[in-house]
Image 1 (cartoon, rainbow, N blue to C red):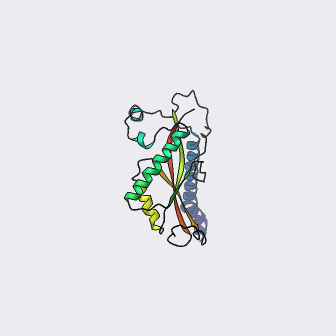
Image 2 (image 1 turned 90 degrees about the horizontal axis):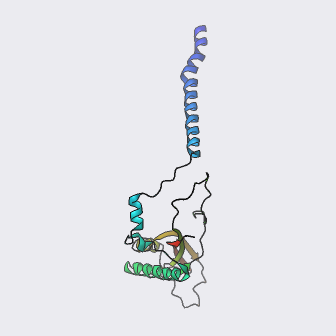
Amino acid sequence: MGLVLAGLPVLIAALIVLPSLRRTDALKRRIQAAHDLGREARPFVPVGREERAFLEDPGASWRSRLPVVRGDGARLAQVDRVVSEVSEAFRARGVRIAGMKALLAPVDGAFSLPAGPLRPAFPRRAATDLPEHRVGGWVLEVEVPGATGELFRALAAVGAVNALLEPAGLRWEVDPGRDKGRGRKPAARPGHHQYLLLRNYYLEPGS
């Protein structure tokens, strides 16, 4: 009995305590390695030869989707182009449009990228590969009449638009008195209006 009582702590330490300590040490090493990896600066990889050739190709397909827009006149022309393409794509797929609204001011949200470049965590050397253009954008709000399922048909139709569009959000409005006395075609339910928000991207000349 004395030998059993004396050997029991040793057995518990060998079978339970020591393996647990080893697992804890291994977990600490993994956490420390992850922290060390996060502190390391990622080296900047310049654009490769094949990538640069594709970007500089004047006939590349991406140029028609992501045009360079200079000045307010060109911005309005881009809005007109996107509205026309969206209208045509929706009409070809039988999706009705009750109205559109162009939101040229920035639309901020939890998902939005910062307006300016992020401050680097480490000092940069002399810039040798600065972009010639920066990405700009605006939002097109499309009112889609009918039931909620029409929004999904509208989303499917967006893929046929050549301009670079990103679904940015959905919006619903419910106002029982909104359609009274305005001569407006009633929605699927009284005062029910639904909107699809599409963000269009283009290139702006860099400063």
